[in-house]
Image 1 (cartoon, one colour):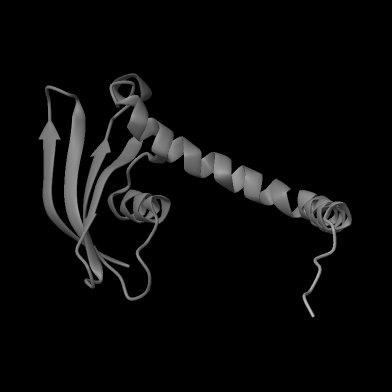
Image 2: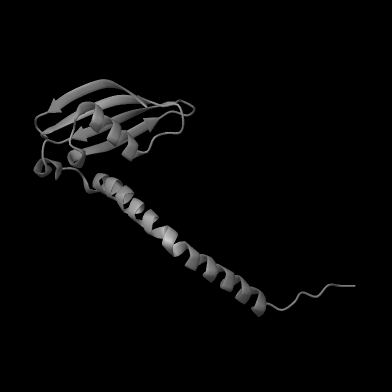
Length: 130
């Protein structure tokens, strides 16, 4: 992924850095987490206080316009709206569940097989007309 920064300004009123850039990529659209990691590494930002606010993409275009807010400390980052925080937290929770899911997968398959047997056992046989 290649990043081209279009606008990087300091918002002193909100005590944050607002970064607008274009992310160009060859394959699928990168996830919010991948974009965040890339900009954090490129600009040496703190990952805990950096939030991807907006990702805009046109149809069939292999680039996205992105808006990121980066705060200097956690106290300032508390100003971030809850819905943006939830976007970033949801990704981390899903990764934790994904690691636990392979262990629970065989149980689900067994239940599914038992459920199919029960469904066929309770139905009367269909009569065909002759």
